[in-house]
Length: 182
Image (cartoon, rainbow, N blue to C red; front, side, top):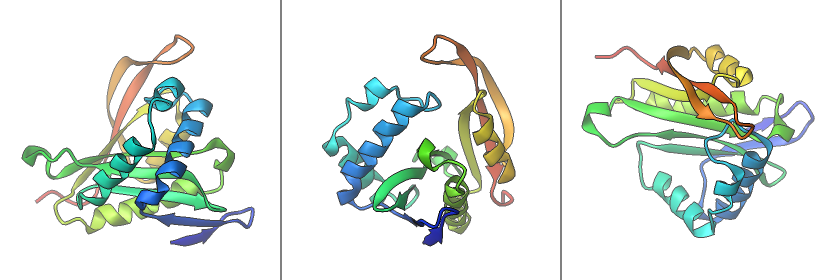
């Protein structure tokens, strides 16, 4: 999918190929350096390598119940959205999603476009009824994006995240019912 950003740059949203491993890893490492809203620390992200990133991508390519989409601007990966299915029969109707966009590209609609593409994919899955996500309580911007797409808070783990500044913040679980359960 091609879109145009407010600054005139072209945004491409597409599934990955194995050759995206280096770019996806570089983007993830930039994200962990610039934000504390991801579970990985920057140090932990530096432990990853091209081979582990290729395995990560291949895991999505091999599983039709999972999704990874990349946001690409000027040939660089600047964000992604993923949907992970546990593979367990008792949870076959649900999956967990995650999304991240590099700060340089915030407020340009990339997150909204990634969410829209991901939800279109999810709606086409006949056995997928519920999506959930976890978000730090201090990440108001992300929570507002999720609310705009209909996600609702359904749980909170008090002080569930230790941030790098030593502060504990609540970890919020949100969900979206994609379609009525049978």
